[in-house]
Length: 249
Length: 98
Image 1 (cartoon, chains in turn orange, cyan):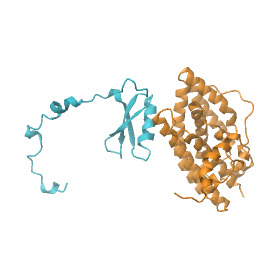
Image 2 (tube, helix red, strand yellow):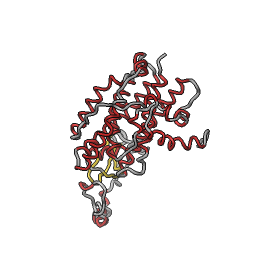
Image 3 (cartoon, chains in turn red, brown):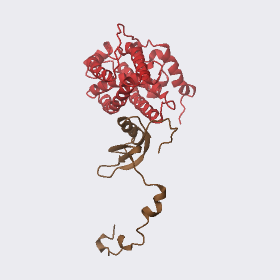
Image 4 (cartoon, helix red, strand yellow):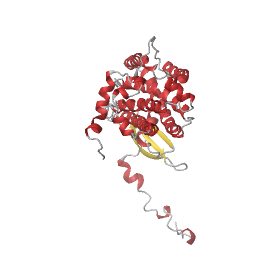
């Protein structure tokens, strides 16, 4: 039996946690129009996470709903890459991270449209359309910031330097990934690495940004070993649901 | 059009084409630094729920508009020239349903 449940948690948690980070910009965007754009992307990611968690709950068969999985799991049970939980930083950090993730997500979801699990293939088909727009929006911003003023270039480069050592975990594969890939249900993320890097390099070159020399890639999130930041994020995200369990509105 | 103390990016006017074949209609305006950004912002602000099949964005500064002072002389001159209005035609019976 392929480990589809833990695999779905990885897909969902990347999007839920990153979507929450983006939602922190709501009302604080640099300009009204970009505030709306970031909230839009955030809602897309949280919507994808909702569908993935719902499916994960069904696969698990323990009667856990998408809300139970989102609000009543502790940090140690979350399976997102560390990349997603880092604090939102400045606008450049948010945009560079969203760009790096969206390029990966687009490749991942394109591949998942061929999943042998029809529900997962359907979710992926919806997510592909959203991710394509996220890439377009963020790539345009990466070029604007990177190839912009001295300050915007410096901020974008600093963001890239900080983020790069967390990108390895996105395209790293372990037994869970390989098993679902062999069963035709999921995608081995390491097979997406070269296509991801090619697209990222293309945009970074246009943005006059330089990929930093990093020898060690951070990892741990896929096994539940998170940074301190995730606990703080979850406490904020989960407080209402945990204070008023079973509440409806 | 833009007040001098406006610290925002340049203003753009947005036109949406509802379904194919219909003319583009003015939807509103927004701020953006470039045309591509204006297009993306227009998508997010005015066309999130599938309202449009096509979007035009135009720098507001490129639009030449009539002024409120034009109201009288510009738009009124036709009223005493009855022959400009199509009221002397008999509408064929078959067309009356419209």
